[in-house]
Image 1 (tube, rainbow, N blue to C red):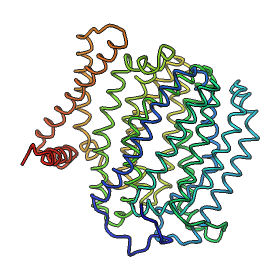
Image 2 (cartoon, one colour):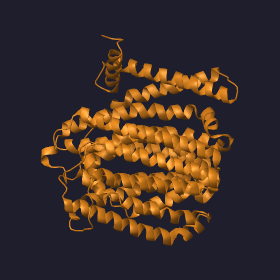
Image 3 (tube, rainbow, N blue to C red):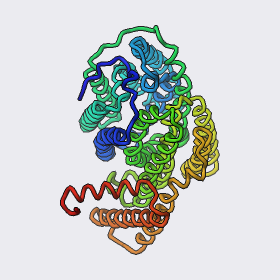
Image 4 (cartoon, one colour):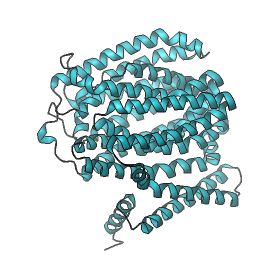
Length: 509
């Protein structure tokens, strides 16, 4: 792990980015996310067997409140440090100072609002939890801004260490505290411990101490204001279902929704997050060459969808035997939630690279407009569906609003970098068709098998359905790719990788 000695990222380092660099960056981040999400996935399963759904409900609504409050005053100045050309030492110091001041202000607001919000949701338990989570807000504000120099140079080895060490500590502390306390306070202890470890790593890695200063806010604010507003709206969009569910259906149902959403999203986000962070750094270097920029985006979108769509659909297809197998008998409602949420997560991943595009082109104001429109549609659908059909209406309206958001994202991208909707759909059309065929085959196989409703029987059911789904999807993708004349895409990348591995093992010459 190399130290980052320069204050910024000078012109001499703004060399042309290669696909190999991006792949190496994505590989490092994938390593971190694989370990992180594996730990989080295991933690969710263990905690679900120790605690009860209402405990998850308390922490879900508390995290939503703290997240929204933090978002309302969010100025992502550290993201600006990645995107800006050659940030100065004063700008690094100013970014750190702004982050600290923001954290203090957010903490004061949360402390003042904790008890009134507990009354609004009729959950007195959330007041002390919300107040305790202000500690996490303060810790995040103290992260070393010089740590972002690693992202500027596509060096994510320290990100891996920070991610993995923080998650491992969080999981260990959470599970240990749950075994001792049998309470939702286990989540709080784990989150505080993980945030502290991550913050400490940023100082060990950067080897520079920032100073309190507000000398150079102009470029930071110019980039961060619109991005910050966009992140506020995006956070409200993400937590809208939690807020409505917590207000109308209580802690237990909210806990089921929280766990179902986590299980639906964590596997897919395992793919999304490393791609997005590495693409943000890479896209920033292609902003002056729009032709290559469009080509790079279409490839990224195609690869993302080729992986996320079958994962989301596949998880929904095996949710019935899988969720009780993992979580136990107390989580029956989570099965239905995963069946609605998992395919939606796969679709939403199509929008993942869009944020990187807007940030790298400094078109964050346009991104804000998209996020506001998606938020209005999401909330309108959720409220209407819930009032008409109750909790199942909330889930169905979430799916409807996701489909609408997908169309909006395609239109947004057309306006952003002039890629037609037809070209976009064509880039992942094979993935859509292959996924639909996979769904049909798995549903047919499910009707033909009848393993007993026991642990071994459920394991066999999940294994058979998963194997059939993967084989069908891969075969259909390759067939469609061949029919289309073998265009450059993820299929070619996958086959090249397989050939290299086989040659390395001596199976091919």
